[in-house]
Length: 328
Image 1: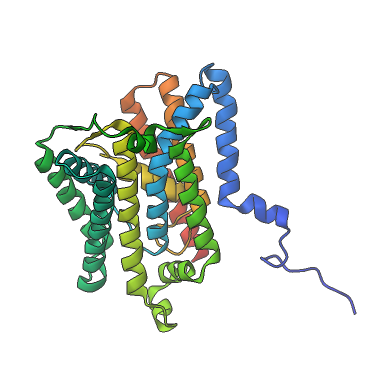
Image 2: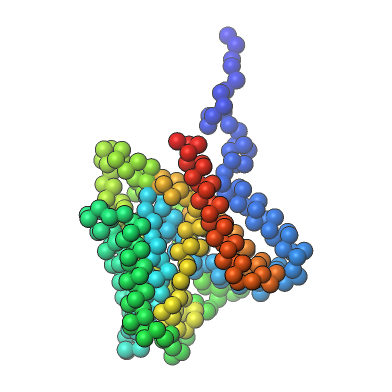
């Protein structure tokens, strides 16, 4: 009896072909090409100072990207991440200036941010509003609270103890602690998404909420939890920024939602929910950081930089829409 060749598909695809079809493989290739081009275009690009600056630039924002990616996979979105991150800085800074221990103040600010996420989750899961509308409202409210609490001026936190500043400014050997914290967060949540049953429910909910509910998954709880988690990670990022800059800036994070969403979508997270990886999102973050650094070194106007970043986001969303139609 003659054996037929395996039909094209998942079972008949070689590991090498699957590797080349992965979104992450393409991103790695693009990043490597940019590195090669920029190494010739600017003598300062491959210097340790620039590499460290790039890593520091995307590391803390990358923590927020992790939360946004998980939320996108569950079918949600959060436009308030920049404002909530700034609010974490303001709450922690304000409490410290009023005599609260900085560690306690930081814990309170992270808890407050988680509470904001729970607040949004309530309106999404119980009231029935869309993530977009709720997070847009919270974006404005949180920014207003920041400006109201500070009078629109940065809070100087120059007397923060050295052990607290170490979170944002210190290093273990040659590696900044910020990057180590970032890697721990990325590895932990990447493992959780790939290996744990709890986080697999996030994919099922984002792929088809009704089908997931019929199969016994408490989808509203999943959506509530991912919304809360995203805001809590914004709180963590805000505390690190506070320690890094030694101040609380009420206008910090304006436009952060653009970078965070762009990084997640470039990395393969679908705006329709149900797909995405932490590793891919971080590669998206690295790509945007490399692009920003390259544009700055090439002395491109900041106005053009905004246009280019917006164009990258539009391209990423268009690709995601096309891939979603093909899969559908």
